[in-house]
Length: 393
Image (tube, rainbow, N blue to C red; front, side, top):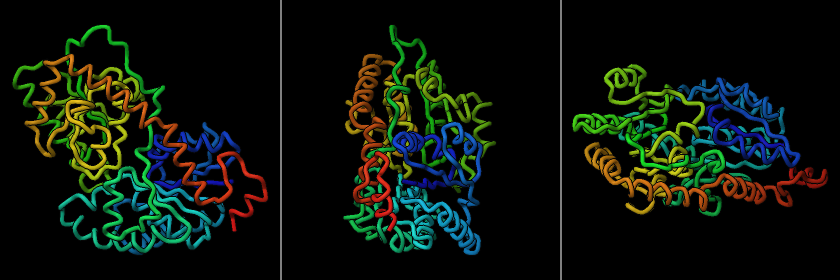
């Protein structure tokens, strides 16, 4: 069988969905990657996958340009003729569902990993876009032979309550998974002399980046010897992105060590002690938190949808912090700096939860089950020609 994965960046497909594509390929299926151009696209060939770059402006509101984007995607789908199209993010899900209908794709999975900027921000642009986005979701996501995959039950409740998608079309798969053999705790024979704290995320204000920088300033002013690491880059496609100049200014000031894009995240995690994500963004299940958990880091995050899927109980599997509260974030970090037994206990518990609930093998298996719902007699192993033909009709 043939599968197409469509996302708004090649980076997302490469870092979050390559393992699922490899599983399909290992059992004789073909997977083609579709995304706007980017520096990660060429890497797919090293793993035996074709990548088709598609023009797409994530921030565009121009109806003519957006219509061309959908038409181009429909043309690619007509040529590729996949049995199933798997879309990722709200915009790609809406556009992919439209294009799949035009191109006659037999089955569609729409994965929405968090409702994001339009649903969480009080900015005028977000409030203006919200009714239009909701209407487009109602018109596209629940139609045809499809399923909608969400990462937390809170988003599922929102979608059903607002009648965006019928409840019987929704499946919840917690997170995109983490490779628990790559992200592992380092040997800790002794307690670290200097606490190393890490925030790894796209540099969006709603991720709590500003609060993290302010907490670092507070603790430095107290004379605490703590290293504050910031990994990630600005996201020009998001109107709430931190500007490059702002991140550079934080680094010059010495508030944080800004690392930019980090290629070897497992190594970075092994060098840290605490993972912080004070997010008030409408997350699915944040990848950085489950990677931090698998790496045995103590976690500090908000008790909001998505984040609370990883840290469920304050003081047991991590620490909660109020959104937009830099002073409380500083207090939580200081607590772990002075209570190293708590630091280690939270890290050990986080690792246990990652193994039990967020291992990518669990996520892949659950994803393949959703494919099976749509493809009838399909299994993850290559289907017989008759079964393939049946699924295409």
